Length: 335
Image (cartoon, helix red, strand yellow):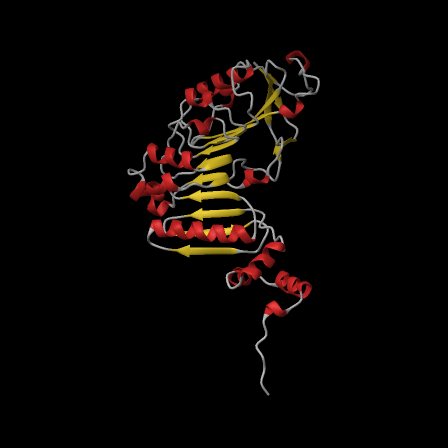
């Protein structure tokens, strides 16, 4: 008895759509390449990726989806071929499963190709596997990094995560919503004063306690960053708390409080722009409060080698307290 090969295209539309929905993405992708009608059917299913994470390291790229159990990778010694394959793969995936690039992570060893990486993403992360650090720490220049910042349209966040020095004064670093820089000892207080970011995380800073105190006084007096929500400093060896809050008329706060990020976007968690938090809420414990001249409350929390500053902008429509109003029982005021 002879049998006739069965074709999926012979199925009625409803059974076909049910079958396609039940198939893993790993099977749908090659199926879409066999027949244009299959590709159209898959697109009509409106399977959402939820966005993509793209990681380009020394000899491999990895792609994952936020809302689907899907990951793929490709390994290649030739950087130009690797990037070309990445572009083709992303194009195919996003045609079938729409979504933005939520995070693009790239290794500085691709610096010769930074001029050609024309992508758009929510967060751009630039960092190097420590294994390759010695090979590239002297070869990487500010010119290369600026080329990448010009070619990539990163909408919300920039993370320069080292471990080599990634130095730039490109105009984009001063007003992107979220900024994180490790190995930031090159940043001076003059550069800090130019930053208008909402969230700033600077690790390995070289600021003295006196310079941080002067920065806070400028903020208090209305000469600082009026966009700022959360600022984090990390420094080996820790900080002198009393030197940093000197002259701010700060009040010690003992009770636990919760700071809520204004207009919280989950993408901010991609590269730990906000340490020690869960979601859009951050628990604050022993801390010091002072009031800016415009009535906005600011909180400083110390944790040995970490300082975090929280600006309570969500209170700006409430009654603004004067410093004289800011008396709380069983707390100390520090002048």
